[in-house]
Amino acid sequence: MTSLDADEERVTRAQRLLIHLGAALVARPFDTGTHEKLRAFLHKDAEPALASLAVLSRRPEAELRSRIAELAGHPLRSAGSSPA
Image (cartoon, rainbow, N blue to C red; front, side, top):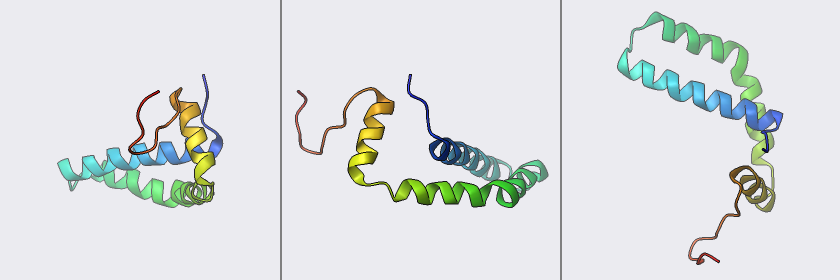
């Protein structure tokens, strides 16, 4: 099984956390625990996550497609292409 590299892991964890916190804020906008978790993320983890996102964004498209195929276990098809 292929695992995520450090930048992929950091961005994935941040995305999952932020989606969870966003949903929690919608459901309970004044929950102090959720606000504290968001503050902690912004204070400690946002900068490294953004730096990792910048690293991933600089990867060439071919490398990204190859990496996605590797993680998914099958190659990506271009829009309009038919399955083999």
